[in-house]
Amino acid sequence: MAVERACLLDEGDLYVADVSCLDPPHGWTELRPAPVFGLALVRRGMFQGRADGIEQVLDPACVYVERMGCEQQFAHPRGGDVYTEVLLSEPQVAALLGGDPEVPQGLVFTTARMAVAHRLLTARARDGADSFELAERTLALTGEVLSALAPAARVESGSPVRDAARRRLVDAARAALAADLGLGLDQLGRAVGCSPYHLSRIFRAATGEGIARYRNRLRVALALERLTEGETRLALLAQELGFSDQAHLTRVMHRTAGLPPGRLRTLLGPADRGTGGRGTDDRGTDGRA
Image (tube, rainbow, N blue to C red; front, side):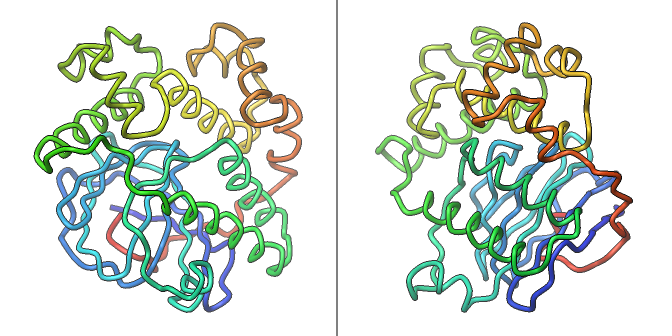
């Protein structure tokens, strides 16, 4: 599998890259420990992670938190994906956690503010912003992700077997949404094999919000990525992401991201950027690729 990794920031203790996994093989990668602390902020596609035996679905509405020493492996059941990689040294992580280098375990579901901050980071890097600004933006975003890990896991209490089954069901629903944002609640329930009511209840317990709101966050994250790439056809974008029309897209993005699509396109979109020096590189944290 080819991995394209374009370095956006390399300050020794802090590394940020734009990563594309192209034509990944079927099945799981080799199991191996994570050598560093890292974040994978998915921008397009969906892949699966298995950390210390626990499987997770990773899509553009979440952040995978890679803990040093964690035994992990990855699979790409729907083909290639694109993500932003953030690597921090142990002292940097400890500083963000008030002196404690132990990173809590969990999956972080992104807010609209996180999604915009993520795209602003990559957009400013491609526009040639200095390393101080990029480091500041990266640490602020990482701090917000780590803060979201502080509360205890929100899955309903119960036996480990039952909790694992619920988690698998929620992950299956997230994977189905990543594949088809147009699914209705009944269709989603049939796709994962449970009633819409039961799915809605355990989905909210696991993620902290309802399926409709989660789907909107996923759609907004995908819209932000398209706007970052310079998409100008808002009506087509609305249709492809399952909004009823362009006005619906505008309302949802303004409400969740704080700005309308046109303004976000100006802030995030390419300004006669080149390729940014993208190349093939074997630097990385894992074997996600």
